[in-house]
Length: 239
Image (cartoon, rainbow, N blue to C red; front, side):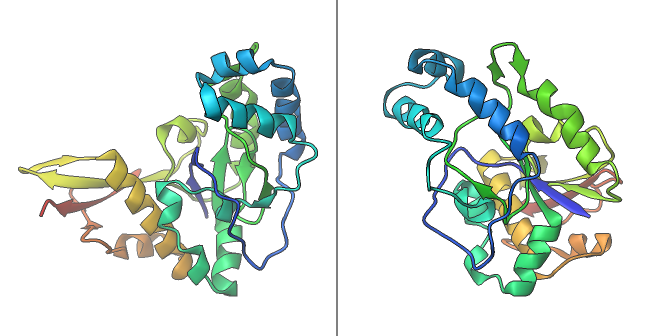
């Protein structure tokens, strides 16, 4: 079983875990992408990523220094977006960390796939971006799908931007709010819930599919009526 999640644009390299940093599976491909980006001028980089000012300055500097920087950290500790804020890495024991490294995959536009212990450097890159004539979706599609081809179960907690890379059978988990008798997915709440679900799976070392449905946090409960073979829905009523 593999659990897939998206990365976040925001990163924080101040945290760490007591595990040896690993080399990402697709490190050669990541280096190929960074080499292409480093050929761009600052202006070209800004146009490609639609960024400017201090964010452009930092992003350009990160890629310029990519080969020489000493800033490297475990992937699980380095992303700091909404999903990752709910993954309480500091509370994980050795068994939890090992479970996470065996089962959790962070999809990445630069690294392709990342296990929690994989070392990453500061970067910014969206999957929808083209570098020259290179579409990152096309670049990664077959590589990532082949990586997952022998998995018996893929649990999808990633955004559509990343999960659409994988055309293999998988079970998507979604979180909905019940408002006036109607169910809606609200972005920020869904991201928080995805992080809580990842935390639940790791802390309970979940190996059995049906155990996922026992998740019950922040008033979310399994909604059998909305769920199907391909989608597990958790819902909660608006207070």
